[in-house]
Length: 200
Image (cartoon, rainbow, N blue to C red; front, side):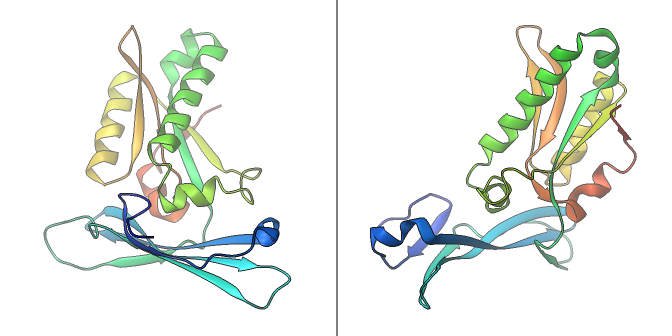
């Protein structure tokens, strides 16, 4: 291909295969996630497509454009492969749970979760989380904070730490009701939520 298939990738190389082999494709994403000074970034290193029933393997390589997140300070890097559970965190407000109809609060969480995933639909970890092999075994952690001040403080903390998320602002009331992260390996983001209670 002469042009990148997505602005996120600088190059893409692949080998065509016959349409008859299309039902027997297995996709594997290899992703490296880096944490520098508390800021997390991800990069798709490569993707391979294995054709079952045949000893051949079609290799696809994608190089991320733009490089890693720029940080200051020391350059120590902790690299983690995706070997632990990939989760999406959803955080609701306890004051709304106690005063709004349950269905309305659940709807707010759904809004935030879908928006966070769609906003990062080309992210390698999100693609893994929503892949056909994982779509029926998603993992979410639903937590609660006391009220509006706490949800805003959490959003600022996540932003400072480089954790991609969606703070849902309900309209027309213009009320921050909940937030959801994009999918992440749990070990990379759990520290941001360790002081929060499970939503019950």
